[in-house]
Amino acid sequence: MRRYRVHLALLVVVAAIIGAALHPLAMVLTLAPFDTHIVVGFLVELRALIADFLGWGLLSLLAVMLIYVILGRSRRAQVLPQVVRTGNSSNPRVVVAITAYNDAEATAQAVKDFSRQPGVVKVLVIDNNSTDETAKLAAAAGAIVVSETRQGYGYACLRGLTEALKMPQADVIVLTEGDGTFVAEDTSKFLAYIDDADLVVGNRVVRGLVDHDSQMDPFFTWGNMAVAMLLRLRFWDGRFLGPAGLTDVGCTFRAIHRNALERILPDLQVGGSHFSPHMLLVAMAHDLSVVEIPIHLRKRIGESKGASQSIWKGLAIGLAMIWHIMSFRIKPGDAKPVMLADRNGASSTPTKSTVAAGVPGSRDK
Image (cartoon, rainbow, N blue to C red; front, side):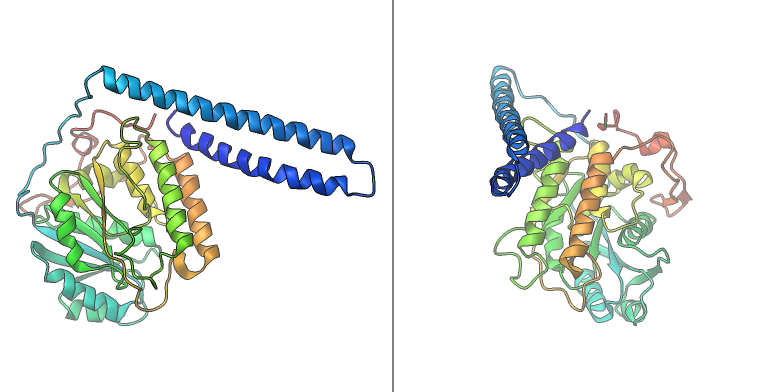
């Protein structure tokens, strides 16, 4: 039933747009040189019906909010189960996976910057069929370069997470991009919160931390906030308005605990540009705790290959995100086995029972 909250929210938005358009349409029709009183009358009745629907919907929402407040005051707060994490949480060893596609100089610089961060033991670069010197310069900068031949942002992210998890020394895996937009020094922010959450994601919509000439113009900022609210509706929480206070669903920069990634990796399936919200959906479906933190965002180096290429490209990806949030469902048997490495470096394939360890059940009902 959770996913129908998103459908209802979109229905309300569509109804409001239609209702707002009916009034000027009726006025235009009254100026027509032929008899339109029947059509105009129908439009007026339809507008009144939509207004009643929205009005009663608003009253119902206020009533539900009041009930939540009363119940929250009258009973003790629900005690959430504590997640027991393994590994060295006080000084975690970090493996950074950088996705790259024809960003040679920027990626090489990112490798150097992330390699200098405290706790970082390995830096991987996932070369997604670059035709420039991305792989060569990244390797020269000290990265382990992995080639991902399946073209797509999601495939590169999946490969980065998979390869990082094969590193036995990885307590925390950081996923980021090599286009120069992210600041390596923000890694410490993620590590500051990683003891309190399974997954820490970046937020690129905070004034003062985002360069004025970055890709986050009003279109992308507002669009990210709107899609984030739909994702929060999908996994609604009456007290916190969703399991995480998300305002940005498209940020690649994130950090995740090793054991948390082992739980969700078999269910990560999206290879396209809407991978970021997909990973959030899977994490929430597995009851992972998610925290969003503000990070810096700079103007990218070189030409964009993703949503910021154009408004139409961004709109297409945004619609794909919305559809994915509406239709998302983890189906038993869909997960593919992933080769992992244990702490001694031995490879193994996790069984369904080991992947789901500590998960009482999917939240996606």
